[in-house]
Amino acid sequence: MPNSEPTIGEVLEFLRDHMVTKADAMSFATKDDLKSFVTKDDLKSFATKDDLKSFATKDDLKELTKDLTAQISKVGAKVDGLAKLNETHNHEIAALRSRDEWHDLRISAVENNLGMKTSS
Image (cartoon, rainbow, N blue to C red):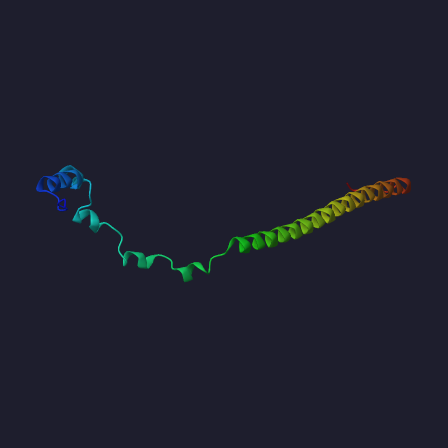
């Protein structure tokens, strides 16, 4: 029956192949490195799941966008209506000025026919 226990040479060879060397250990974290890691207390200031529930979802934002688009369209329609009223008002003012000028000319003509002096 063969001996199942490893020899000292086999153990030493295994250790040499699998143990960490000093150069390997240099890349591991030190106690000072671990001090800068985030702790549970550091995470207390972050938002929790419940805090995040109050934020809008994609669907909420899509609905809001639809509502805003509808409101903007309504405002645009109102502005267009006001612009049309302004244009009509400007045309009426131009017509009234023209009629006023015509009346002034007619009054001047009547005054001239009557021999009245105009005070201009």
